[in-house]
Every structure is written in C-alpha cells, then in structure tokens.
Length: 176
Length: 176
Image (cartoon, rainbow over all chains, first blue to last red; front, side, top):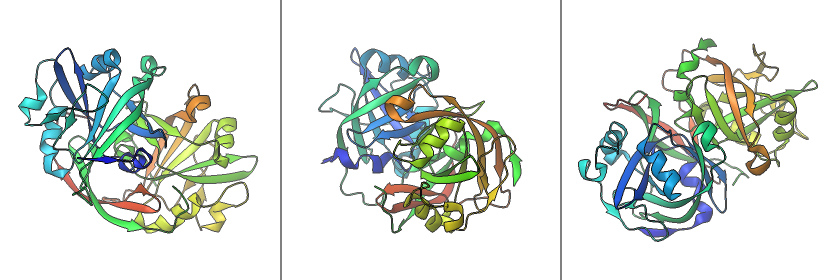
C-alpha cells in the first residue's frame, strides 16, 4: 500500500463502486458493504454515506466517529457479497470471509489488505444521521495499491446483480 | 419512454453513473453534468446530490425546487462533457449540444429524449444546502427506454477520464 494524495481521492469514489466500510470498537472489528455514498467536497475530501441503523456498523460509527472506506475489486466480489449477507453482531466477518485487517495510521478501524484502495475517515457531520442515517466523513489519509492500474471495481445494480468496471476513455474536459 | 417503478429507481443510480440534471425557470431551461449523487432511501426514492453554487443550476434548483435527473450512455458522452464545460448562464445547452427536451409529467424541468432513463424530482430537504450545496431530492416519477437492456453508462474518474460500464454479473445476495 502506497500513500495516495488526498486531492485525488474523489476520482476513486466518484465512479460509484461498491465499497467496504470497516469500524473498530472495544477490540472488535466489523465490515459492511456499502453503495450509497457520494463525494461532497474535493479537499479535504468529504464523503456523504448512508449507514442504515439496521446495520451493526451504524452504532459503531456513531460511537467511535471513525471508519475506513476500502475499495474492493472483482477478485474479491464474493467476499463483499458475503459481508453484505450477514451481521457483524453475530459474525467476525474478517475471519469468516478471509479478509486481512491491517493497522491504519490515523484511525483505529482497520485497512483491508485485499482491497486496492483504503481511505481512513473521521465523522465530520452527523446532522443528517437522525433523519437519513447519512454521515458526512472526512478522508484523513488515503492508501492505494500502485500495482493495480485499471481496477475492476464492482457497481451494484440491485438484488445481487453487479456491473463490472469496463474500458476507460478520455474526453476533452475542463472539469476536475 | 416507458413508466418505470419507483421501487426500482435505486438500481439506476446506485452504480454511480454520470447524470444530467435539468432545470427550468421563466421559460428557460438548463442542464448540467453531475457525478456527486447517492441514494438515501429506497421508496419513495430519495437522492442526495451536490449542485455547487458555482453552477448556474444551483440557483434554478433552489428557486424552483424541481429538476429531472437524466441518465446518459456512452453514445452521447461528448454531449455530456460539453454540458459540463460551459455555463447555462450564457449558453442554451439543449440547443448547443443537440439535446431534445421533452415535457415531464410532474415537474416543469424537461426530460432528455436522448437519455435512457429520466427521473422527475422535487427538492425534499435543503438543510445541507448552505453547508455543502447538498440537496435531498425525492423522485416523483421515473421513465426508461425499455429497448436498452445493458446501458453503457459512463462513470467519471476525474479530468476527462471515464470508465464505461462493463459486463454484468450475478452473485448470490440477500441484499436488495
């Protein structure tokens, strides 16, 4: 894992991949699959995301105000779906699905070694949590696997259907 | 365009495509490209999206509290980038880029005939507009082009680079 500039983090999340969100509390870790996220600011990178109060991670995120957003690729898609199909209240998902937690630098929540990018986050705004379970996160530190040039991210279409990232194109654009 | 069930709208936006957002006010229309959006609720479908106050659409959306989210595909990618590269304050983008506005049923903002899906929206919550330019939209009515089975949506990677939707896979999932 190599340090990745915060100014470029938006390009990792803007295409809309399924991500994994890790939390840690009182010596226990958890990980959930998440697709409801959006960039809110370039720098410092702010990310809005919905973590339902039916998810075990909701309470952990609220209590610790820290998490890691890890971005998986097709190679571990079955582990991602596995994480989405059970609860951290009763399952150690890192162990159950063979995911490897690694220490983060700025937060207690773990990085996931099998993911091509990891974003260490703190909760920056909770005003929309009571109404929509929407947390605004600030990315404090980003890591990437530099060996993976065109990550085959997965994008959820609903009910177990996913779109896999296809070809890259470049168009003449003035947009950041 | 065929009516599309509101209960399935999340599957259109969850994969994270670049979308076009149309607005209409005092006989003028506008359209902007947008990637910072996330689902917030399944039904009625709620969508959080960031419309910067540097965009002409910001004022139109705030004043009219209505818009259409239209989902383009690779076929019109150059028009999408064109919309992102100029301002509705000085350009009639529908005319400049050969996009065809069509009347919506529930809002004044137009549908875009060249897009494979169109979502008529009202602004449901503006509490995060002052802090983050983040609007919560409710989708009132959805339309889809039923002829397009595997839309080649485009997903922004930053600075004119896009990922085009690739192959579809199905995994055994209990998630909606």
